[in-house]
Image 1 (spheres, rainbow, N blue to C red):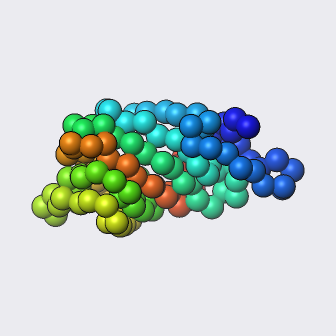
Image 2: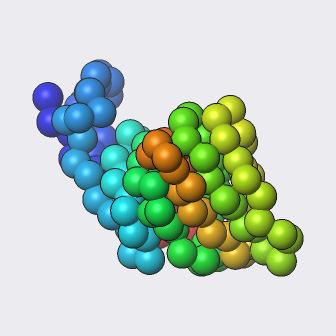
Length: 129
């Protein structure tokens, strides 16, 4: 079964999908990044769950989300993370990064392996009022 981003579970029955089957995208302001939406706004409208991969040297340039809170969980790899005016911090597997709405942030993949992340947005990106 191929599941497109933001597609809701069929007729309330649920669904099972494989990561490789999900559509991929690279967000604006990101380089060396491949994201796959695991749960989109169409599922329940309350949160979005994304699997992200940043190749070594890949970057999510400094930006902020006005409405959405973001939580990042590092599965693999090393990152340099900047939050607001605080000094950048190196993060690795099992690190949780909590980013409130309005806080500028940047993530750089340090290598040598790809940075692998789970990312939650609440509300889903672009749906905040």
